[in-house]
Image (cartoon, rainbow, N blue to C red; front, side, top):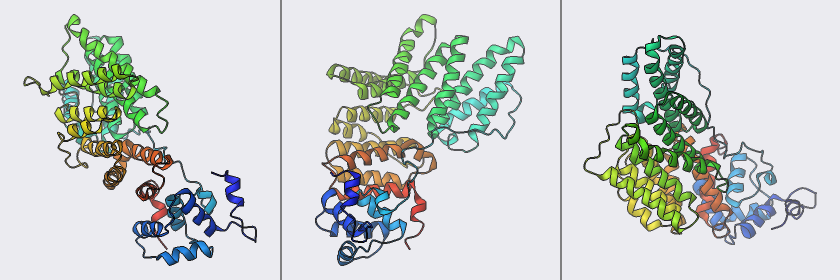
Length: 436
């Protein structure tokens, strides 16, 4: 393809200005490979809810009559992969950079530290974690309690400090997990780092194991959002933490430490999933699937009890989702579909795991080469994203779109082009306030 400067000079008209009609025609035919202008017309009408004709499109190209309003220009630029500046469009904030840290303003004072009340509230927050994690005021409440516990640890009575330290560690873990759930992954890792330090200092081995697992989970979540998958630092951190957590589980009996079945199953499942993405050969892929099989045996056993009051709700759906993703990482789409068939996939607005399952189903279709079906699934997912779930999942959709759009095999796909405009609309809705 010509360089940017060559692109621009070839479109200069007699007056020394860019002939935008000629520019649009070139990108339609030579870049997208759409010889038939009807493809653009159909997409344009669908996305802008207009009713222009192919004759309108031909006049636009031949008579240098590109619409002057920015919304239509952005749609044309995105559909045809035209660099926005070529159509005089301003630079936008990078669509990949979604906030994953949060500044916390604590506006409420925590109740005075009472070990019984703090323990009861801790269990209450974990027991309905998916609901509490959505509440805008839950993080300030947890942080206020952390501050109160830190004060009690510094200045409280000696006989109370060990109990306070354990409560503080638990609240740090909870705070990290709520941030992870809401998509503030760097902040989540910071709180979990504090919990690890405290657990190590105080010899809270079970809490240390629990925190290693959750930090590995957060590192993995953050790695999935990066555009450059060649940078595996977060993935390697996840593999490291999950392996360390498994080692602590295996040695727990030496210290007389009870580890819940939920935590054991979760460590194996997440460890297998992360290892599948990091596998370099068939032996490591086999090791990843073996971990997941071990998790499955724990979670599906008749004796399995999901009664850990200070942890996530780990169940068979959880296991099947992780295993499906490991299959996708290995390129085994049919096996992934079999696992996803075991997931209920209920209301994605109530449980993020169902939203995630729909995303995995889209990716499995793409592994099979069924790009159009996969994109349709992604478009359905985007319809139910909210501010919370955007931070967790939108980058993954954007990464998928950009990978497809840069792949010569799919550059001619109208479905890929349409997905680009859908992404633009959800990331920059201000561009679509009006079509006039």
